[in-house]
Each structure stands twice: as C-alpha cells, then as structure tokens.
Length: 166
Image (cartoon, one colour):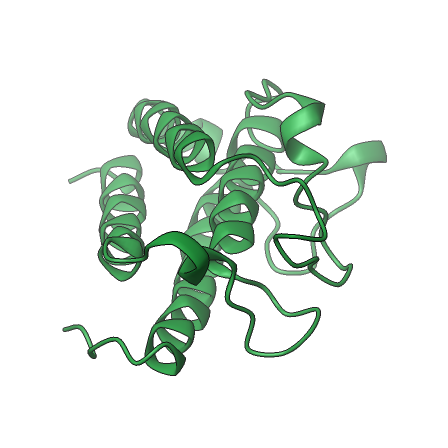
C-alpha cells in the first residue's frame, strides 16, 4: 500500500465514523448547541467540508473547490450562531457539499505521488501551518481534525439522549 492509499483509507474511515454519528439526526437536533456559541452538528459538518477543501485542495493542490458564499457560513475562530439566528444552508445542501468534497479529496489523495506528499503545504502568503510542514502532514492533519470534531458530534448525540455508537 502506498502512502497516498493509506492516507486516503484513513480519511475515508474517519468520514465513515462522522457519517454514522450524524445518520439519525433530525430536524432541530442539527442545531443543538451544548452552550451558546458552540458548534452544532450542521456547523460542524460545514466546517469539516470547508476545512477539507482548505487543507487539501487549497494548501496542497492550489485548486479550491468551494465557493466563498458557502465558506462564509462556517468561519473559523468565531462563535457559532444558532440556526434561527443565522441563515445556514439547508442540511441537505451541507451534506451534499460534504460528500462532493470528500469524493474529490479521496480521488486527489489517492493520486498523490511520494514526491508531492513531501512538498511544503503552505497557506496564504507562504505561511506555514503550526501542525504540519508538508502535503503528507496536511492530509494527515485533515484526518485528525475530522476525528476531533466527530468527537464533538458524539458529545452532542449523547446530550440529545441518543445511544452510544461503536
């Protein structure tokens, strides 16, 4: 198995877990916030989508997929707004974008050469990321990042009284 295949497998496995966690969310559950300003499942799914686009398609491939209108709903580092307070895209739209970006990401990662994986993955203005140096690290970080937020979704599920998943 190549490095690229392993990274794609890890991304796919992490996404499968995220999808299991959100599979039975309904209606207002998508907007449940553990506390004011904290992420709800809809925001977290949009954030994972925009982050994957940034980490892989922008930083590694210089070919972003998402438009700025979608990205604007999921800014990093600001309090998350409640569903009635903010006009987020519908759940179906967020999930469709999430699936589209994931499919394109897996295709891109599977085709990455060892040479590409070793290249620097820099942000705007050539700025390095604090958690990785190269494309390999960016892809790996994308997986860790999703696992971190999947844990938040798991907590939301438990607060909603949903069963623990294995």
